[in-house]
Image (cartoon, rainbow, N blue to C red; front, side, top):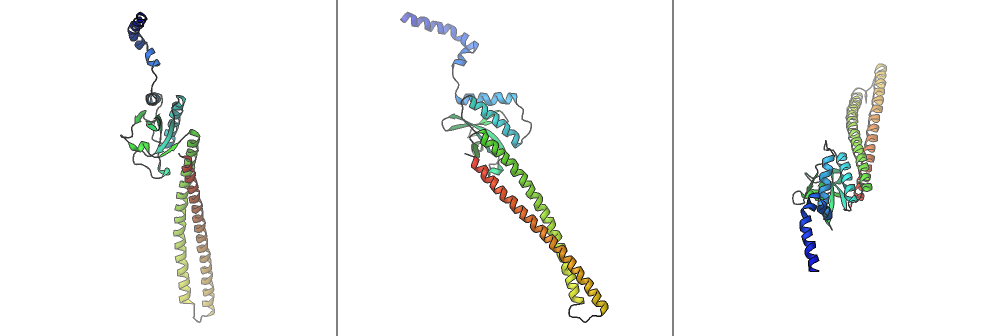
Length: 247
């Protein structure tokens, strides 16, 4: 028995360099989740080019890496936030990356756009923000984010138009007040001739016409402010749904 053990030990000593050289031994040794995650992010970076810092581009890359981790049996989260300044509101998130669970309850941040890992001590902002358990929830968030951006642009345009309309309203109202003041000064409480009466009636018609312009501007301004209010309400609903998707 001892002879057999000695022979096996000698055989292993002789074969060990060969096994290492052929890479067989490395395949027999199971890698940790952390090591596998590092391999995945490095290999992904070697085969993918990130050309610009844009939220929806890094989103696609984060989804790719999440799927690769899951294929290796590693649980992961899709994370969003701001890794430079932090974000207090989900609408301020401008970047996406992946958190790989390297041990129960412990995560390692994978920067998918750069192909490297980030430890919490190096940048804790990678471990803050909002998490998504799966691509389905995250893709819905991306749809909402796109809709949010569109509505923000609409509100900005409506606000600019409302401001322009209000300025027009003020200008027309001031002119209306001038006409009224001039009428009161010339005709109100005064005895007038037929000629003056005709002029007074013409002036009164100008006042009425100007008042119609004032009311038109006022009505248009009110319509715009109502539209802005409706869009702001929709934004609140979108943000509420965004938050509901996160873990």
